[in-house]
Length: 81
Picture (cartoon, rainbow, N blue to C red):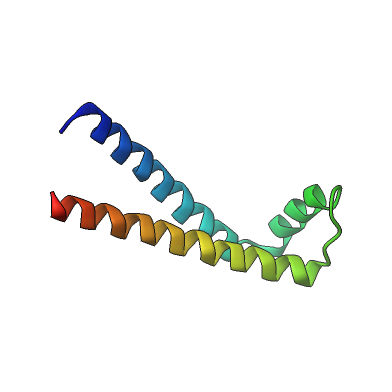
């Protein structure tokens, strides 16, 4: 494998791990942790607690699906080579 290909797979693996674990963290976060995140964001944009909970869960699912897509694209790329 050429070095650029190895760098590409390393970066994609990092994106895969970060997006999956962050997505899981957003989906299963406790209300206390969500309130801490909301207090940071509240400085810029006001979001109600219920709406922020929904948005964090949706963002978690998006990140989880993005991580699965990256994994799928890596598998297809490795099978094709």
